[in-house]
Image (cartoon, rainbow, N blue to C red; front, side, top):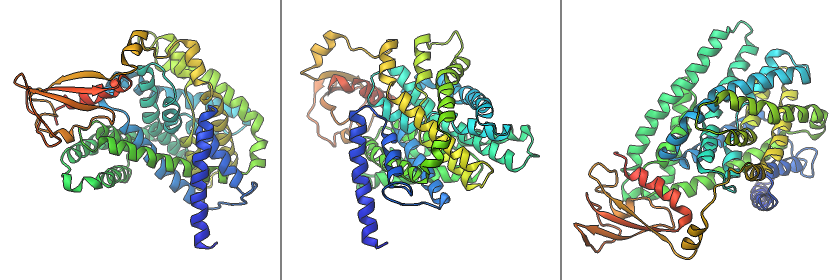
Length: 481
């Protein structure tokens, strides 16, 4: 194909994908469904007649895309928000994933008559909720903030668990002598090393981003991408979960008081979107529709069992009585287990390894993800409203803040991270700004280069709609760097 035609094709695909995303959002359809459908339309049995035979390439693109998506999710998850949801999210990401993997494996064995090892592999592949699908859906819902934070943290942390389980089952299938104790050791090694590496690289990233000279500030996105790739590659090299490390580094960078934070968040959100498009379109190209139809009915049955029975059981097993999550919130968590890029990318791992039943497993996973996303993604807001877990703003607040911004005050203490920072370094959201600085009880004139000192009283003006985000910024200001 002529080089200019390749560029034209790629540009056209990106442009049409953007339009497809807009249409999908307008009609309350998850964007990944639109991208997958577009990929299938371009595929060997579609109008484009494009055939991908290099599964390794698809696996590589999928892996890079997952790095971008998880890092973007980490940037959007501040330390304060994570502390509020870490216990339930950790339980859902470990106990919940394990319970889901086992129960889906059992259901797969009886529905598709696959051997036990392969059935459990399917269970492991579809055991995690997907960061891209969850983050995209939550942007257009207004469920309780704590509940949304649990879902965000779970979707970020459970991917490494599902990936480790998948790799473990693939190893077990390839080496039947692989003992279950070795399986558990591999799992602990992956997650343990990933956790430690994430903490180390995250702390290093926080130091770097709080000390980037203004002269090279334009390179902040380059440094950010480098931080994600280096943390992933280094962690994988020493046998840990690079995906867990990347997510934790993203959280660390997003929680660092920095004048570049808003810019980085916007950049990585767009960067992750590009890779979402690439992942789902390439995966759509890999699908052969007539083979997909052959597993449609049993896959729908597996999806229904997973959504209606297995996911709720996993939620109740992970969050037993006595915790701070009430039964309505558990019901919503059970319904919000959207699948997405991760299971399909993991299915390409199976195909690239050339395992028996690889084609069948890929088609099962693809159809389960598609059906689950359509069913849950299009109804999440409706279910949340029916359960009464929508965040409601008091009417008096709506009247008060509809036409004017809110003033919020912050007193600087000597141990605060913001102490000795310049005004342009504070990392406020786009719609917020410092309008007054009181020093020793008197208003002072200030500009972007003014140094903030101990005991200063800052007056920040911001719309009511971003006050939760502003509180996240204040939380970072209070940290000691």
